[in-house]
Length: 479
Image (cartoon, rainbow, N blue to C red):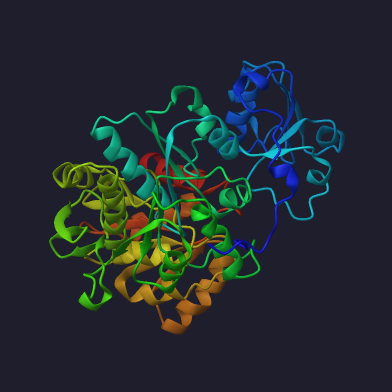
């Protein structure tokens, strides 16, 4: 593929870790930059402390903000916490910095003085001998990765799931070996941190549909996609890259990669395309074309709703087939996959109303897809923090809803203007989850589906999208 896989360049300190094995970690001075609440910082601190390193954790958030993560490390009294600030000496005097993917490298004065910079993902890839399955994209990453893992475990594989799905692979590194298979969900930020290292060489990789996202972080879609491309930067001819046949980005990826290309589509491939390896969806399920032979790998009825979820299951099934699992066993796994929390998660039914938590829908396209996933009109709960995205997809989907209830936020203000132009039926915005859920209970009737699919980021009112989803479920169940 082209040498310039990103608009940014990582410094040499990204390729010179002061260890080549776990045994060489003991005695190192390690600074974990960004403890956070997603588990990656906690797992990194725990991993290095357990292996004899002198660990300092630093985060701009306060002790009160980070209390759950601090409590999770209470059994390691030797860990030093520098919170509410960063100190230059904690970076200058460290042998290695473990950087949170949410910390920007460019222009960071603290990272400038680092002797070596790694992440929990890069440390894992350097030390584990497991076979890697990697998944990236804009939406559908978590569901696809989880469905692959579900299928592997159901068929008796020694499998693990980690990455952007909020499970650091360092938490299970010691359990993996050459016979293990690790499914990694990787965000664009996590991929950017692997640039130039030459350590991500998945047996199979999936790129789910690409949509505008994180445009408050990147200067353009091209920069965003350039980091996505890093998933196949070091893949060889003996590996497989699964690409989207239905958009232009998939074709770009296919042209650049050295890996064998498998395709996916929401409809049968045209005969003139000459596809010999791929998968597609029809009314009665999903089908696989493998070396010119057709088999079914996805039943017509699945436990999770929506065509986009079926696409995720289709991609999972294609990975399982590449790994040698039979179509019959794949059908069983894809049909029984129960879904995952915060992704169109059906969690409650009361008085004939079904409640769904889709809080991981952080872009407008994902919220629109949630609407289209149901055959009958839904009561859509949406809105939140703006990420410099276009809310037109939600406005277009408004006609398919029974009513829209808005949650307050900077993105909601943009969406309101579009809904007004469409003369859509909406209420709000409501200032918090409590009043939003109360309104949903008021406006819903037996037979309705209430879907919390914000289509926006969560940062004005919540710690993250998972905190947002949990608070929504708590209010529905206990409010």
